[in-house]
Length: 379
Image (cartoon, rainbow, N blue to C red; front, side, top):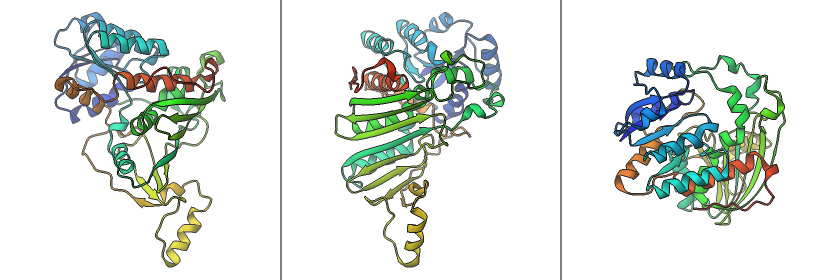
């Protein structure tokens, strides 16, 4: 399928790094409203540039647009692409307001088009192995999930020096204005919704712990940098998701069932290690002195989820970025293209994308919503 990329910033290099994994996708060209960003990206990757978005959308060979603009532009760019008759795969979030996300989904349906949203980490090997482990009953009936998306105090790091492969700077001001929950919650919300279905009720709290991020932005321009959301799924599973820019980096998830505990070490790694422990959280069987040593190591240790029976996670051979975000970013658009061609529903699309977006928006800025909150969307 012929695709085009709109937005040539930091994350676009992740998509280009993983594009060779999917030979069925042909990149026709790119566009960025920042002429220098477009030229820098094109010079590094050897891609054609469209002078305007209108020129890109006037190209009849383009079937799918990958929207990698900054979040504040997601709605306007995706809407323009849909109105021009193009399918859309958007970086998260689908839009910055629930009503706008609903409008995009309704527009896509009215035009018989597909719209989907990142992140696609749920399509990775670790997530799919976790899903199969849940479905085969290894952990029994799942009752509770703890999911962490803590990214530490990145604002105290030397982020001004961070560059993507093509030289794009890390968009600090945009990251801090959008907020870590809108940026990161989707990484595990997609897993949770894919595993356990839609959320029927949530209670969330959010706060701004560090209003000064060193970017010269006023406190009003800085989004909340901490959130915790308790989610009740229609299936009966209860989950707690925490996102923040304060606590030490932790991207683990612990799925607690009647027959055992399944732990994911890093949700940003498509090949993350998975560990299985007994219902009490211990690694069994234990034998002799080895068992006593394990019990001592486990006791009171924050890394105890690294102990257990390690599950086998398939290796796909896909190229992934050599960064903390070790996932196949272009897998989402690739599977979307396959589904469009076969006339089936793409993963992460339509009502599913809307639901994850709504949950993220509410968790990011909880003061604007009554708690407990019952989502307007479902899938």
